[in-house]
Image 1 (tube, rainbow, N blue to C red):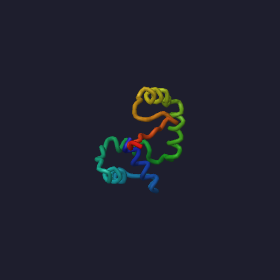
Image 2: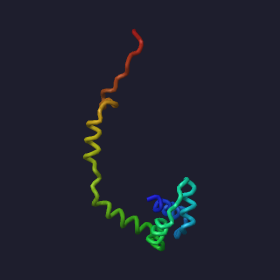
Image 3: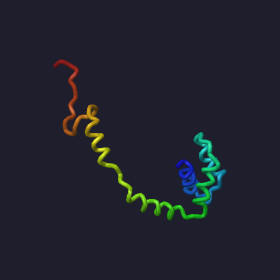
Image 4: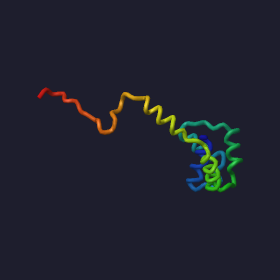
Length: 97
């Protein structure tokens, strides 16, 4: 994923056909060493393609993936403890009046 993200950053920066060196520079700026095999795979798959078209094709595929909202709701409901329910926020009176 990091190679795709670096590729997209290069394209966003105006380089429509980033090279392996360009992507290595981006990854190196945040302390990541690039694996040449994976990097070359990403470049070969994306080189020469319109990134907007690639992203739109990917978005249509993601539309069928479940988001998992029910799991998040149940985890929040059973997590309990820390937060007060809406409308029940109370402050402690630390002084005896």
